Image (cartoon, rainbow, N blue to C red):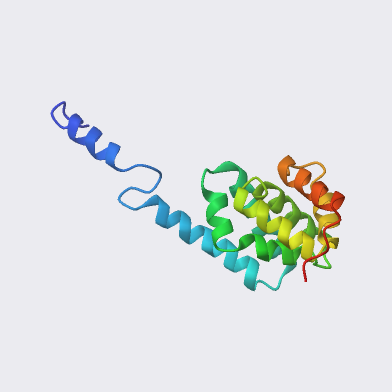
Length: 155
């Protein structure tokens, strides 16, 4: 048991070690984890691993501040859009849910609009699987607006 004279030293040490990882930078550890998940999305050949990695992206994108920006900065949304064309429904649905949560990021929203104008059929998959989950109403309004303007697909 610590004596009364050591308690301030322990409190000072504990206040310097923020997060779950004492003496390490939590941002570096989070970045490594995010990169690992995106690498799994890019390289995995099994449908279950792809679905699980997309599900992890969905969980992270709506639970931790700044994580969605990190995911967008390393083009996780691009990989997820590719997975919307998968022949496996589980992979498509997990990718769509993850994209729905990422759509709340302003940079991702603009990239989504560009990608959806390039391949309009992907919007159908995205909307099919995000009916019961979250998707940015701003993205939906801007997509509807682009459809009303009858903007041509981007080549």
